[in-house]
Amino acid sequence: MAKRETSKTPLRVLSVASEMYPFVKTGGLADVVGALPAALRQHGVEVTTIIPGYRAVLPKTKAASKHQGDLITLAQGDAGGSGLVLAANVPAAFDRAGGPYIDENGFDHPDNLSRFSTFAQRAAEVAAGLYRDLSAFDIVHAHDWQAAAVVGHLHHILKGRPLPTVFTIHNLAFQGRFGGECFQDVGLPASYFDRDWFEFYGDVSLLKSAVLRATKVTAVSETYAAEICGPAQGFGLNELLAGRGADLVGLVNGLDTAVWDPETDPALPLTYTSRTAAKGKAAAKAALQSQFSLETSAEKPLFGLVSRLSDQKGIDLIAAQIDGLVFRGAQVVILGSGDPGLAASLAAKARQHPTQVAFTEGYSEALSHLIHAAADFLLVPSRFEPCGLTQLSAQRYGAVPIVSPLGGLVDTVIDANPAALRAEVGTGIILRSVDPEGLGTALNRALALYNHDPEAIAQVIENGMSADVGWHASAAGYAALYRSLL
Ligand code: ADP
Image (cartoon, rainbow, N blue to C red; front, side):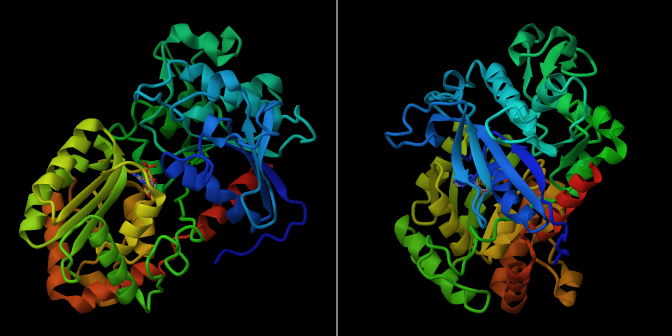
């Protein structure tokens, strides 16, 4: 465990993000932003978080229903919880139907550039101490493209006087890129539409401005930090990223082990520890089979998938393997939402094998937790993966993760090859390549372990359940990074 920081005055960080669990979540970004405040408090860092005041996060009580004021307090920042959480109240931008980024019909909100630039401007003003009784912060930590413009706005507000900024890339595929003619929506003088700031091949790129100008840039795993400096994963920003040299740092995400704890999880029929995992997981499997009218069988290996349905996540590769898995006696349970074409292909597989395959299109924390508990294996064959969280939650719940050989997946899973089994350190199965053959071979290995080597698979489950998938190490890393900037 990392050494505790002894400094008496806490360092004050403003975390700026478009999602934060439990207030609003579409993916891992929310989990990370939600977990960091408590993890960092142990290192003498006091985090205040600001998110957009989406309709879904605004207080629903009558007294608060007018949503007056520019900032709304969502959480007060008690000692054990999430820290102070503020919502930037900009009704014209955020008090509307739909999700954070897309409308009810699945299209991007057309004014996303101005929505998130306004949010970033408000956050910069808070950081600079221009709001209420909040004095200026020591450091601003912005996450992903939706918060990236905070670096430019802060520069503008403070007229170039430095306030250190950390910018974290959770997924380089999303860059906040808009036509150059829209630059005025960023809300900054035209001089910022420049190669040194927001201009990128004639377009506006919010992400690029922060990649170039934040004091430090972090990526959510060491391997991903290296991968994005190359053309294959750099999405056109690789040279800029490589140019940041030692100012680009990889810090792997952790899991909120209070939210993901099979010992206390209310979503499970029977809670369990690593000692009682066999019983707890059997109860979860029976519950899941009954919920989806699958054949009731304790023996059949169950493969789980909880994911956004997108090309990134290799969902098409999984769909192509389902017939073979069922033929070899396995069951598959899938929870996901996203690409309608991928959803249709999974729904077709569930109709084809109604007693062995279940597909739920949608988003459900409770079902996700139950699948983690019930599954013998959890599938993560991503084409790229900045960090990934489900391979961590899978380990914690005793579901053996089957993952691609890249990004944060290789930083958090140890392949259970014969040498690792001998050394008793394996925690999952790593594909040799992200293609049908690579996934097929990995599934064969999984079935061989499950069917023929009960001791080995018990060892892999036990290793995964006792692995340190929490925040200790990386929170210490962030705290050290912040302090290096003062
Ligand atoms: P990404 O952020 O790229 O979607 P991550 O693995 O980093 O992928 O994080 C995804 C998070 O969202 C995990 O906590 C995962 O359990 C959760 N998640 C994804 N899809 C769903 C869903 N349909 N229902 C519930 N949770 C989901």
